[in-house]
Length: 324
Length: 279
Image (tube, rainbow over the protein chains, first blue to last red):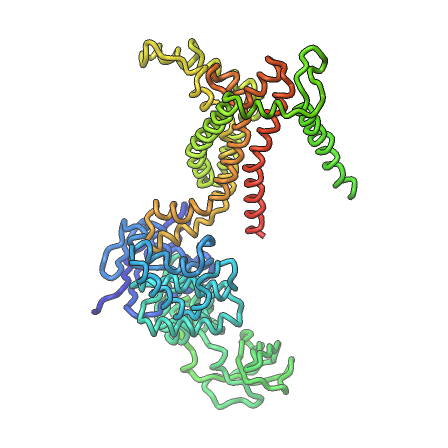
């Protein structure tokens, strides 16, 4: 079995004068955990809703597992979605929520009970089948939503900001949980997120979106290490971006060496520490140089002080040219 | 603070409890046509026993229940799509649509019922139209039939059905219907499994708000119904003003109240429960 599970061709969607999705082409391979990453209003959620069938495109086509989805209503698409707000049915208990999709498909009752039990085991909620959504914590609700979307074993699972509604501590653990489930079940996930850390740590590939267009598609390493445009470099991680000889150069903070002596590196510049942000495992320093203020990531050193004169240096390979 | 709490209780005590006690006292008296008021006080259950022995009262009571029930059902079937359409309309259009629903309240209830007489009369607008258009050369008269009573009740109480239904349907999260569709529910299935059960509090509230006053309705059956449409409210009126039998009229009033306490209590319990659910 080869060929993409999702193929998007020239897809556009306008809302009045706003073009939410602008001529997007994209392939997602089976078994990928694919992230659509971008700021608010970049069109990532609209793209996900187009895949689910909640919006109809103005132009272009979507193929899911080789089938043209044009004109196919949401309830006939081989996809399931985990909603950002979870959209759990408040008048049904957890087991009824999870079994809803199976009941619609006319699955026999004992089979539904078995598969609901399996799905709840998978998200470690086996004991809470009889609870109402209102009686659950935020993290538990998130897992019910996940179980409900997983129970039909869709060819494609869509996740709309799956971690956004969780508090920070829970989010960390749930990230790994989602990745583990995705690998274990061998499903294809397409996830929308505005959080670049989330996309970088979870996705096998990601697409960075800006004003309705896909700016770059690649693995997290590629997108971080070789951003295609200034926008991507700026959006993903921290970056020093400066113009030199008519072209734009990106220099990641951790590629810069900071020392009190002039280092023996290809590029060196003298500067003065303007600001120090101590983050425990590293310190972010803003260093004013001749040309610009550079952000430098360094191991924490209590001897660093504001106003201190330092040297910065980096290898030519640390620089990466981008399209403006 | 205390005065604020006391005032409504005082109000209810003076204007509701006290009159009710008076009605109870009159009901227990006997008819005395020559005195003013035409009541001889005492302790007699004669009026109550008459209520349960004369078939007329039971028949009137059952007719009232039947007409109120069918009218409530029709109001629900009309009101639900209306409320649904308003709740799904563009947000900026909803206030206008809601205002259209309550607009009839700006005219006196009595005048609106009289207007229906003008429409449904033998030579009323409806029949004039039917004759003029040639749809019917000799149309019957709706006025004076049970049809007219149904029509009047549904018309008069429809807003009481639409408003509570709108309140629940407007709050319904559209995301739930998307989730249902996403899980394979056809639109009709999504409606039956999500929208309908979640709007149940509004259905119960609307039905009781229509049913309770419709049972005791007097003006509509009196003006639009014929002599054969015997509703309990009209019987009460007749006993009081035509027969001048105050004790019997009072007994009818008390029975009406007692029998409506059930649905009213149901309504209040349901209101309290939906309030709880939202807390």
